[in-house]
Image 1 (spheres, rainbow, N blue to C red):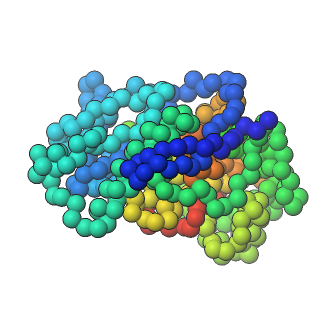
Image 2: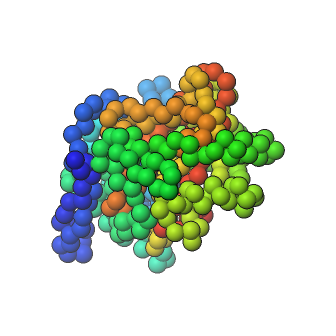
Image 3: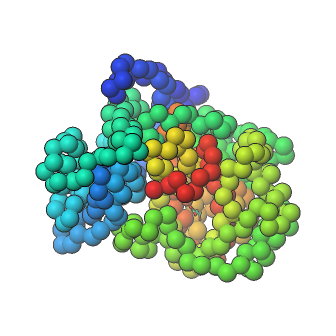
Length: 385
Ligand SMILES: O=C(O)CCC(=O)C(=O)O
Ligand SMILES: [Fe+2]
């Protein structure tokens, strides 16, 4: 049974009627997830920074500052209320919904009137004008997209479908053999695969030794403009980075990873290996690995897939969890040498909001793992907002 389909969709975002193919899950979710975390996307259409606050009954806290004409995302929980503020003035309030598109923009419809009212600078460069056009078209497109697919459109309008190959995930337990490794489907949407013995015990040992020599530093999350909603307590691990050319063995692992994803070796679309150590109770709360590039960037580069490499077996806790897995909450147990591949995009060029995942707290011993991230279509870490 095909569980992922492309379906024709007609739309009009102001350039006349158009049609395209969008990704739909032709899949009957057997255990609809009761998980209440959602990816929430924010769009700032103004030419000034706007503050995003989390509104609780007794206190409000700054989550992040949205740059002018930009997009940002967080993982939030159903029924939480946020506000956009400009110079302390609440412009808009909104609530995270379980079954709606959680894409919120400021202002909703009246950008030019607002600009006038608040005496904000007008869009005065071609780049600003271009970003504004892309962002408004993206918002219009999201209405069509959500109606057709039940998912939010998290990419920028006009982003091409991935040029990279994607392994199909048609049913649970489906296997793909590449060289002498087997990818086994653990979830159809998001597409998650387990690869046993991806690393030999020698390689595990080598990576581990390598990581010991590096100075581990407290893990950062992608955005520095955050406070407690998004960052405090979200990631408590320590990590370091290993470049692919730092040792011949690491280079071999990179080559194998490219083969497993069926990608050409050039251009290099990977980041350095990020080695992570979790101690007792350390965790990484539910998050997405993709980011939001500048809307005026033609290529829209962002992360495409994550390959997790487990460097030890954890006896209690420390599982990687995919709470929106196609067959309910999926928990992968860390086992030395095992890898997990999951895609962050869908075949139509959208970001996969169901790829949210979490590193559960370690209950016994330590957990060591390496992240290997692939970008699409090119690697451009600087482009993320
Ligand atoms: O530790 C894990 O199991 C997952 C790590 C992760 O999601 C990340 O570092 O982005
Ligand atoms: Fe992650």
